[in-house]
Length: 316
Figure 1 (cartoon, rainbow, N blue to C red):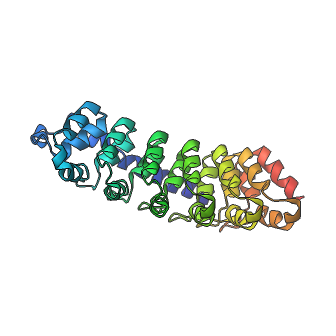
Figure 2 (cartoon, rainbow, N blue to C red):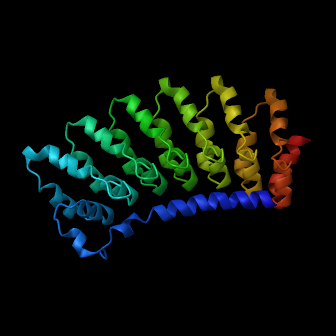
Figure 3 (cartoon, rainbow, N blue to C red):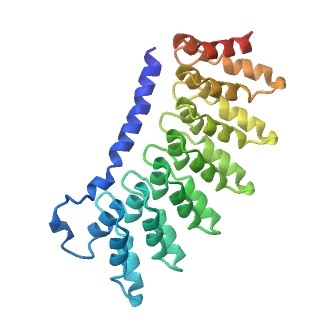
């Protein structure tokens, strides 16, 4: 009993810390000291307007620069606060799509500076993509991905970026159950980039959690299905490796689904194995965590009768 509860606290703590970091709107609220806004073109003003969704104010600030001051405008937009947040971070975090568009349009044909801006990280190594993915702002995720155009190398670097806890945008979207964003991130990879896609899906955080672990733990069935369906017949060995991965305490996705009672996810995981892979299937079902417990032990402990019957059928 002790191990799943401990791990659940770990996962909960990650979520709490994420939510703690996400109070950006409060950092730029109307109650801030008015002295901070004395300069009409201060860094604070743009961040504040972007954070609270004041589109007209953002437009007004950007119009303060003439056509001849394009470089100064770009420099202004790229400014960071003391926590290295840009206006793009706070607009993306809070779901202000129109403001994100305004900020990105500032760069015009200067694609190099635009990509540099989009790829900026805050103090905890979050990009705007991390924030938009965590909060489920699908249209903003698409805008951010589209800024890279044909520059596949930079796009791949951006999508695969990890924040301080080694969480990718895919991990964060999977954690929160944002199926459409998970789909967008997976489709960012072309057919010729399958190896990078598998690497992306296999990335682990500090606790060796993969996207499949976190989606299975939280009961996001549609996301689990999306992740499993990425693998074609010719990549079965990769699929089996992905499904059979253990986390830091040797919990597989099946352990997590069984412990939390996600029967349909348990079935999806088991259905990965074909008739020719019976031995691998038995190995998976009988896999033990660090405390020598199988998925069946956990399902029995939590009284998830449907999962107990399901697993017993495979063992027998």
